[in-house]
Image (cartoon, rainbow, N blue to C red):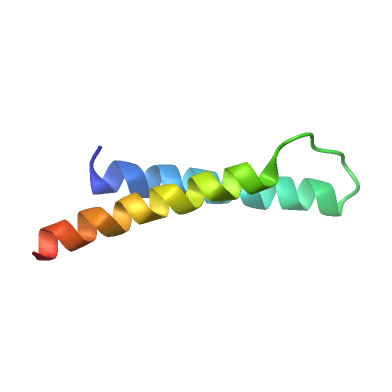
Length: 57
């Protein structure tokens, strides 16, 4: 995957996290493993950083 594709996915995951937080803050029960979603977002972020580092080398 390209860095641009990974960045797009990261933004989508970030938006999903924000949406889930808003729903939960408004008393709507969301049956999603939020920590798994955040973990996935962090993994994508690491992949982006690796792509950035490999281009600088």
